[in-house]
Amino acid sequence: MPPPPATEGFQPRAHFAPTTPLRRLRFQVRLFGDLQTNTIYRDLRRELAGFSGRLLDVGCGNSPFRHLLDPAVTQYQGVDVAVAADFGYQNPDTVYYDGHVLPFADASFDAVLCTEVLEHIAEPAETIREIHRVLKPGGRLLLTLPWSARFHYQPHDYHRYTPSMLRQLFVAFATPVVTPRGTDLSSIASKVVVSYARNVLALKPARAVDWLLWPVRLFVAAAAFPLLLLALGLGHAGIQWGLGSSDDPLGYTLTARKPVSHG
Image (tube, rainbow, N blue to C red; front, side, top):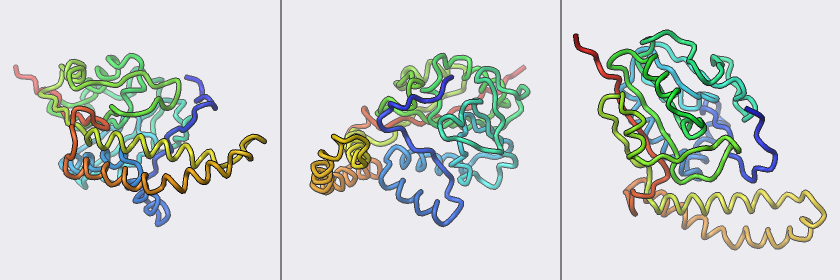
């Protein structure tokens, strides 16, 4: 997998755990302004509370949500593809592999966490089989995916999954539950935030013509700031109180268990 193209207009920023005062401040700002991250954090904080034993974080990146793990998790293991560093992810506690066969024995983990990864796998069936293989019978899976999200980490962004498709993909797991994250208002608000960020980022002139457009962009950024705050307010209302329709959410969270064989 080659490095991301330099032409991607607004690549998602790498996640980091809030392990220092500065990172804690950045994390809180991101939870306010990045509605996707906000919903992921809310669901993981709720669902990870009951996890225990050995946990595998598939596509872990910088392990930004490791701090949410329950003390009952006795071992954390991250795994990611070897070229993850090309996308700004470097973690010394991670095992890197070829993206096909997970380098772990059968039934070796009590739980698997996988956040915002499956959409970047062109053929996901193999990865899902591998997750199923390394889970112990009765082991838990927690997975998040985007629904309303821009084309990102180009060109390695291949899918947007409906709940119907997710239930088919994870049919080998016991009673997969798919829960929407946010509503259509949250999705619209997220688009506004991204559009605003693109404009603000473009304030840094790169070419001679950009210097001519700089005052116009600055004016637009200032004039649109109240709209940004209004959009964020509606977006958080969709997340917090379910205002709007959940048929067009920011993303989905899937929880499931590996069946316990009998006989």
